[in-house]
Image (tube, rainbow, N blue to C red; front, side, top):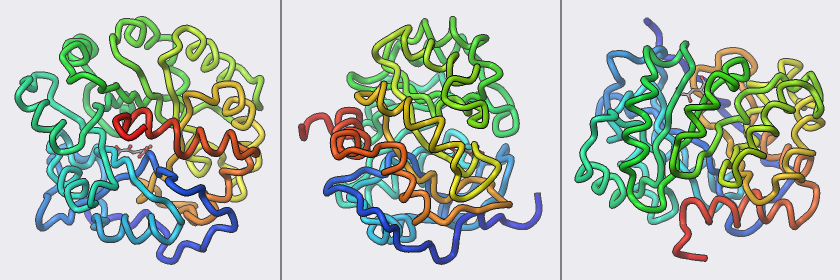
Length: 291
Ligand code: 0GY
């Protein structure tokens, strides 16, 4: 690794769509700043600094009220940067940590006090060296009350992961719908398999996120809109949305975050769907005590 990667748009447009009051950007990250929070020695990419000030400025620019900050792989299992951003958010951010599965109950309680409400298991080989299922299951059985597990995987290993996911005793949230090939359309094999997963348990949630990663045709990501809108409608009580800013490791086709926000009414065309996607559902997962 040499140069630090700047993976985000330097001047995102103002979206045409105005998010509802109380809307949550439920999938975003912070990087560093490196001088204060060095990246992991195992990081697969070395990003530029994208700290809490920039994240909160984007939140306000796009018209969101809150953030859920997901620990990115470049920070390994040291959640200090994520916790620092949550602490600086004035109660407007909570987070998802990545932990060493041997973490103690006391350390988990400290993360809870810092605003963490879930842990993330990342199965992308390009991002992490190993993903030990037995150890993941152990820590998943020891989480503080009300927490969930976020899982990031690609569509080709969904079936292989089914027994592992079945064994997780807390709610699951699937990043980017398990990265389906959206060009197959809403009834294609990848989304069919994903629907079968959702139908297997009523506590599996998902993020209707990342047209920029899933639709190679690019902005305005029509294939994504076509494939994902029916999923949002059919599973409206367990879907959330996020920008994915600062778009880890994106080097080509860096998305305009304003255009990402304009995807929302295309996948959630009614006020009811938008309220669930942006407000009620993320609040149920991350701020349930406020409902
Ligand atoms: C995402 C996607 C990616 C990266 C990470 O933790 C990470 O580094 O999540 C990716 O490269 O696909 O959701 O942020």
